[in-house]
Image (cartoon, rainbow, N blue to C red; front, top):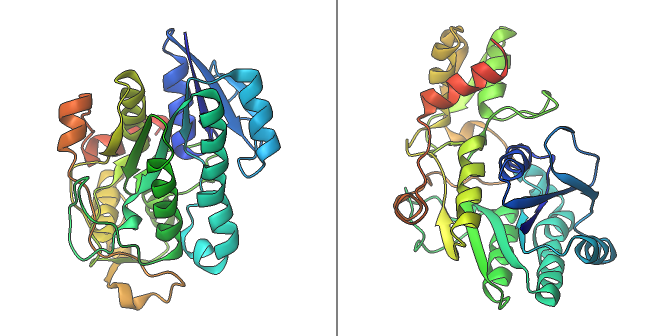
Length: 299
């Protein structure tokens, strides 16, 4: 039986992933996070772990002897990263180096989650051969982590993704779809950008992509996302229409409207042919993703 250790198990991806992995009888799933698991009924074994603490990593690795580590833990709030660069690099870059060191000692394969924000946004969608050129500290921290993984000498896989959405526990955790839905339900007018393009990714699809990478013992870089290139404004309109909310509350804006600490890449999105061909990955459509969210919220 192969042991798979997941960091960041309380995150949106982590919650979906540990449930999926634990359902496979061929795998022993070890879930780790700084806080106790928000979902206790997953079938995974839980260990508290702060990935910035080398001693804690060593202890958990010694006790669990993982065959594969999937690092989903990260600081992902882009503006926070811009305003707290040292803390951002500590979590997104330095902690990865600590995990890689532990993996080298135990011969453990390593799967790193990364992001479309390692690209400059000048064009898209992008395949795995596209040249990284981050425009903010978050993207820089994730790119440096990628580079450390590639140089690690381990069996490694980097899974990049784009604008993940879905339902996590507790329900207060937000993403673009839930933010739009909640704002419109509260009759709040919102401004949403039209000049950024992404391929939004359902959290269940991303978890499935990670699972397939494990099962296929995939190595190298994989782009895992949805297939539809959409602006956040498009996403907001489709969300409003799906949930029968007032789309007149949504106003189009461009990126210059918002004074944000971190610059965003304008056009990214992914070409996912490699994942479809090599892993058998097939994402939901955006409408199917909304239907799943509706089901999970018991609407």
